[in-house]
Amino acid sequence: MHSPALSRRRLFPVLAAGSITIASSALSEVPVAGPPVTFGLIADPHVGLAKNAQDRLGMFLDRMSTASPDSLIQLGDFAFPEPRHQRLVDSFNEITKHPIHVIGNHDLDFGHTPDACVESWGIPGRFYRHDVGPLCVLVLDGNDKGSPTHDQHGGYPSYVGPEQLEWLDQSLADADRPVVVCSHQPLAGRAAVDNADAVRKILEAHRRKVVLCLNGHTHIDQLLEISGIPYLHVNSASYHWVGGPRKWVSYADPLFATLVVDPFKRLVTIQGRSSHWVGDPPAEAEQDSSNAIVPQIRSRSIIAG
Figure 1 (cartoon, rainbow, N blue to C red):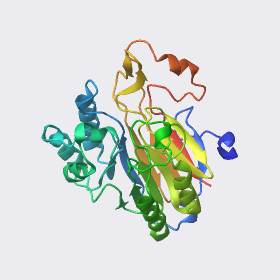
Figure 2: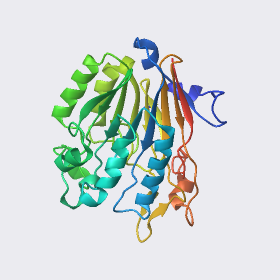
Figure 3: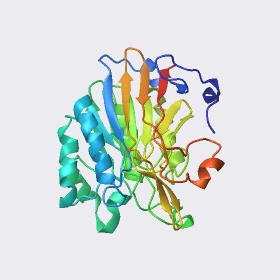
């Protein structure tokens, strides 16, 4: 169940009208010193699968090379760990000293392995900690096998196994600074990992350290708050999946965002991008009462309570 704090939304004046503000306790509870940290965010470009995905990722990289953020985060379904895509990976890694990669389910298509992603992308492992200034970023891999409920839905594995759960709990306990948690599959809301309750139980035990949880995968734009922790579904750079003969509906422009965490002001801001559908919008968009199926990443703010 969502926290009642969501019903107490108020606009924050530095952002455009319509931005959403929710409370997060982490920046007010964990002693921290340091300047604002800026992240460039992209999710689900699907290079190798989606039309124009390489161009979309290229535009993101061009913008980020000019903006010079402290860190870049890609939230999965990025580019296959193959020689033909290595140039894009290298460009991503060269823009900042803090490139952060999350393994998506489609990154493992066609027999690719987590180890191949680790080697191609130059990351410490399939799940890991990466500190960026006064912040700790914890990256999870939601592609574990072994879910007791997997047979009920089939498809790709969507599970955070026991080894990772133990690591997450210990990493949060050890964290000496506010934490941002990244995963491809959501930890809350639509299409959450099979054991989302178990993951959130650990997060909530350390809620005073958790600034924000970020995910891709769902190709929607939505911000949830559960037990004082914000969960942001970052929209795909490329399209919304509809299935059937049409398969997907593309966005006219690539979607990506900038995330700024300001410990001193106790403020998190997301500056997004808007586009429009190529052709008719998905029928389900009109039936979506949460207004999450949209060709945009909204600009939002999160103020520490």
